Length: 298
Ligand code: GDP
Image (cartoon, rainbow, N blue to C red; front, top):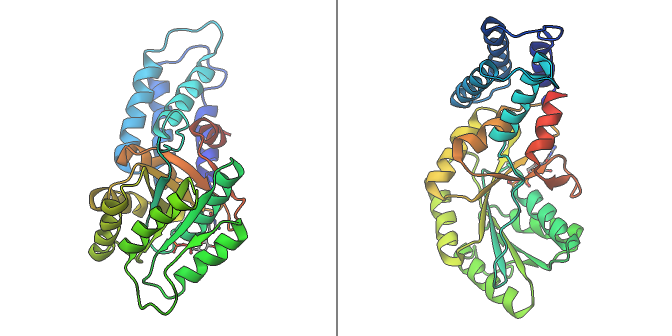
């Protein structure tokens, strides 16, 4: 992830090195190269436009600095703007004042929700929480089993409908899980919901029904960073159909160009809370905009 973008940005900024003074033409030329680098990395067009305008405006108006040469000054501006579109400050999980905290996961099938449920559960367990994983994806026959496998690996209990009780009602399972969490002293409930391969009204309605029933403290939209530009339209569909308070990027270990990671926050306004970068439960961390920006700028 980000290798090409990182190379392209580095070379765009390289051309400024050694210049004693930046003319507007220098800034324009650099901005053009940055624009191409971002578009090639699949960053959404409105995000590219805002980004480039900011860079131009700030670089042209920059005070002559004693401490930084022109190239360093532009690099600093690009870095700050990258941190900005990635969300600025690291956003922490919103915990309920009266536990349990309910976290609902929503996203397309294959986006990595079930894996993430295990990762998040393990992460929270390490921080001293006692999470309960809840299987509300009752559409795919294997989904419940898959969550149980993940739960076992994470060492976290899984709440699921009894086998043999028919398909089951995900809304009822979600409601019962919160009651169970209260009585069994689980302070966090992580609800895994059903996804489809594409955006689908029935899936949205089900997720919205679960949301209305359990009123989550956080609804996290889980998105596969490998789907590129589609990440933005999928995020918009989930924002309108279910609504979410935060984003989790998965598969950041892949060789995608990074556009999704750079667009979703700016387009939806929702902060990125976590990043998932591998199939193992340990391949997971809180999302830090500043670290990601440094990684991109090399
Ligand atoms: P769900 O359908 O949304 O519940 O998605 P799953 O959790 O079943 O994940 C779909 C596939 O993606 C599985 O094969 C996972 O092992 C894989 N996967 C999930 N997260 C990551 C990740 O961060 N990196 C990689 N490389 N694979 C992942």
